[in-house]
Image (cartoon, rainbow over all chains, first blue to last red; front, side, top):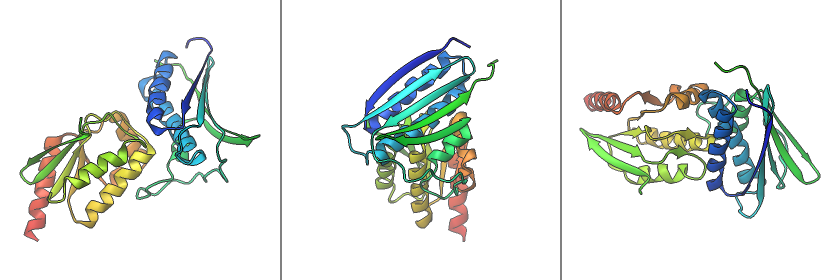
Length: 138
Length: 121
């Protein structure tokens, strides 16, 4: 593994920017030595959280900031997704969605593919924190 | 560039998705385009070979599209999905409600047989 790093990104609340952040996060993972599959999983989980900020916290309205705070240490990475929009009323229950369901998969993906996915809202700021432990990559 | 290109092979409409991601910003446009261009199709094969990334919104749009085709009794399958995306599909158990085939040739063959069976009923 490489040494500790911290990178901050900020996008406007538009879905077209989310994929670009995803590509950057994937590259950060690879740079830290994560394998392709783990990097893809981290990318996917983070995109789900960023989509939620744009679609739900900001009701798909542009002109608001979504910040992505990437931090890596020797044995874990942590990604914070921060918005100042409408907070979530509650975190979705950890229930496997029906294959037929059209929505409700975002938090389920985050929980399955990250070691933890937490949500906090305080003083007008909402934050999803995703963490992934890093094992030695072959 | 159009997000989808079309080719008909022995009754099967092959819709090649020409975007690299099915995400919240583009997924609905893609499936709306396929729906608008497949009104007379007897069977539809979506070629996902160029897709590198799918998010949960893209999955939701795919399920909606699949449901509409089932309502019209149009046989439907997806070909060429990359291995890492197939992991996501299996985790969601989408392979229990949608047919996935490794290649377009296999998908076309499978759908042609289904058209034949449906015609014989």
